Image (cartoon, rainbow, N blue to C red):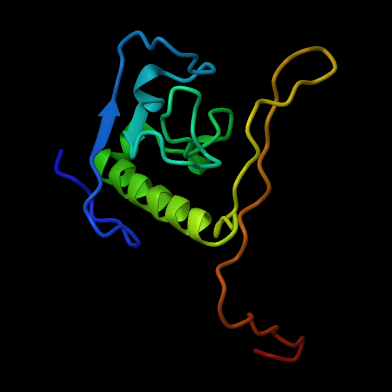
Length: 138
């Protein structure tokens, strides 16, 4: 893969995406093709990195619409990677501000010991507030 142009980086960023038939890491019940490891800027500080240095871009226990899955294609994974790297740059340069909704790390435990997870609903994009329709509007 060629290096990615990322807003905030003066040079293109080398990215490695690794898919494993039998991953050496926990996939939390996901098929291996839905939980690849994406590496970029090894050693860079970030609040969203795995212990092995891979980018942490989604919660594995979230529903498919809230995470990348192989049927969405590599281009979407690459764009998600580009966005994540931009967010990391911004976070490092702006006192730890993460511009988009993000989830805490770790998998919460229920009283029975099972892992459960549910991220908050996505925020509405910034911009003009929606106009309320009055009850007399057609």
